[in-house]
Structure formats: structure tokens, C-alpha cells
Image (cartoon, rainbow, N blue to C red; front, top):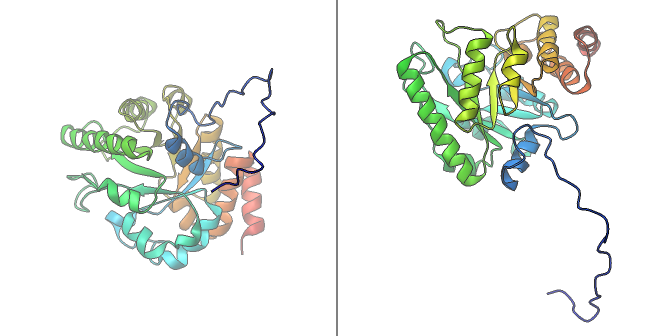
Amino acid sequence: MADLDDLREGSRFGIGTPVESQSFHIKGADNLPWGMKDRLNRIFNSKTGKSVMLAFDHGFIMGPTSGLERIDLNIVPLIEYADCLMCARGILRSSVPATANKPICLRSDAGTSILTELNDNVLIDIEDAIRMNVSAMAVMLAIGDPKMEATTIANLYKAVDQGTRYGIPVMGVTAVGKDMARDARYFGLASRICAENGANIVKTYYCDGFENVVAACPVPIVIAGGKKLPEFEALELCYKAINDGAAGVDMGRNVFQSEDPIAMIQAVHAVVHNGLTPQQGIEMFNDLKK
């Protein structure tokens, strides 16, 4: 109990000094509860408002694909250079050190590896996300196919309901199947649907007219890296996306399949947070490359 013998009357009330407005640095988050803001702040750097997310959830449908054969050897050394990690719960428990002290965006839906990752997707129990102290839950959204759209929107809606109850943000991840368009109209529609259904972050792909996709989405957008590109092209993708309004990148194969993944993630980080041009980024990559 506090000692009451020398309790002094308060005198520093700052009379005449108005309370500063505490506008939050993350798009669309001003009116969220404190816990939500705290988790989002772990993901997005408070100085730049940006994030470099390292995605290695591919194995949940693809198995030990190139670069993900050994998480302990190929991914763990990259963790210190990422702002946030995106992975599935089994890998988080088995392979990501609890001492990493990085926010986790947990892959929170699951599907089959047959034909498409969107077959009969189901949502994990919110209690699993709570037990693992995650900072966000990632849920796929696919539009255009009646069955997939109904299933994935239901998953997103349920995740948002549960996340709101427990203060955990949700990232809506827009899917791109073989027959789905890859243009600003599709990504703009999918991103807006994610946000309208309560997603706090949207992950989508860069495209022509991307600035319109960002402008029409009331929450932060991070871009997916997609297929493996040459290092310069991947850095150029990051640069264009950030310049067009993206709040970050969620890179996977363009980092862990790089000829030097540690050098690559540092170069990506510098482009996103420090404003390096693609040319400066590739020079940094070459300087750091072993």
C-alpha cells in the first residue's frame, strides 16, 4: 500500500494548456479501442506508419516449398529484420522463438491443398489466437465465385466479430484465382468489401491504378509480394506501392527465395521505411550480399 504520511496536494495541473489531440497514425483506426490500437501499433511503425511483414504461411497448402524447407534455418535468421511475421499456428508454435518479440499476424483460416486453397475454408478458434498473443488475424476473401465468396465472406465476418470482442485486428487478404481479374476494379472491389465487413488491414496486390484502390479503402493496405521476381523488380514493386499509398508490404518468396534473403529483407525495409529508390535499394542489396 502507498505510504500516506507524506502525501502532497497536487499542484501541476497545466491550467491554460489544452489537452493535445491524440490522432492515431494508422488509417481508419482513430475510433478503435485501446487494445486494437496497441496491436496495430506493433505492426505499423509509429514514426513512418509503414510495415514490412514477412509472410511464410505458404506451407499450410504448399508444404515444404523452396525456401521453407527448414523454418529454423531459412526463416528464423530473417525475423529480426521484419516488423511483423505472418504464419500459421503450427509453425508459430514449433519453429518461431518466443524470444523473437515480433508481432504476429496469424493465418486464421485453413483450406485443402486440392485444386485451390479456398476449398471449404474454415476459421480457427479465436481462443488459439488469444493464447498465442497475436497482433492480428489474417483471413482470405475471394469474390467472383459464388461458393468461395459466400464461404470466405462468412469467415471474414466471423473473424471480425470475434476479433472485435477480444481486441484483435483482422487483415482481409484478397485472393487471386486463375480466373479472377488482376486489375484495379477487382482489387478495389475486394479491398472495399474487406473494409466494409470490418477488416482493419487489407492485403492485396499492386496493379495499374493502385492509387485508386488505396484511396477508396478506409483502412491500411499492404501489398503482397506475389511470385518471385528479380531483386531489382521486387524493390521497384515496393517503391511504387509505397509511393501510391500502400502502408507496407507483406513479402514472402521475394525475400526467402532471394539469392541472399538477409540482404534482401534489409533492402526492402530501407525502401519502405527510409524512402530508398529501387536503384539505391539494389545497391544496398549488393553491398550487403555475402
